[in-house]
Length: 68
Image (cartoon, rainbow, N blue to C red):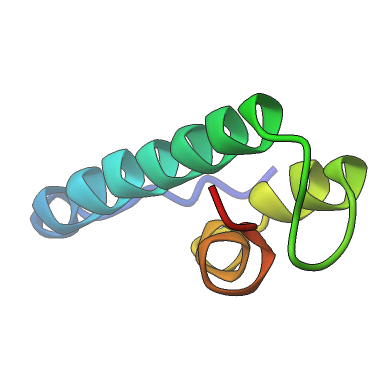
């Protein structure tokens, strides 16, 4: 097994990005489970898409979220 560690000087950059990623994913999942209508797609689709890095939650909030 190859040991690949993140250099110490990059950690201050990656930690906020990881927190942002988990926050966006959590926000999109909470919204998906609280609402029944979507502009495009269905609940299983948006749950799956929400786990795709930064792109998934952004796509949900841009094109998937229906009118409140």
